[in-house]
Image (cartoon, rainbow, N blue to C red; front, side, top):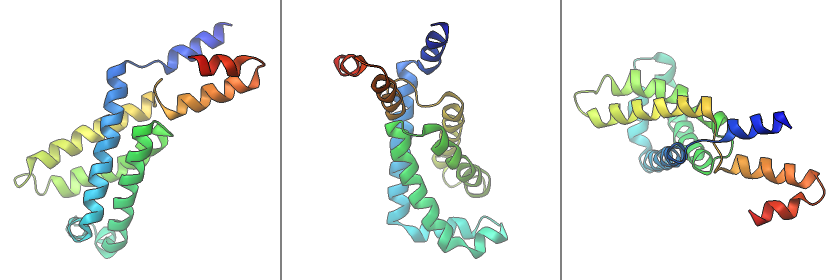
Length: 158
């Protein structure tokens, strides 16, 4: 009985943190769509990082980063596998902050600040997870309710 209370308490997050997760996901979706619409710009950013491995594979990396941002945004906004997709985005943001935005900090301070805020939020959600209002919690509760007789009806009432 004691273990159940501890498990329930660890998944509870403040509503504002859930709202931040959804905003983070929507921001990543927005960036992913803008990257997909303008591969040439993303490819140009990657070529000018100064890292030879990135520059040689700029076209391929532009595609991967664009679709990965879109996919990660969808999963983070819905709260499904939030820790995993937040962790996947962290290396992309490290490159964006230190190799892309720092070089062009005079040109666009907004992009640098946005990248830093997204980076910090990704770290928070790698640690905290998706929270109570998420697809992860829905599936966890749904499967838990389905294993005990009579709990499925209780799940659908709440």
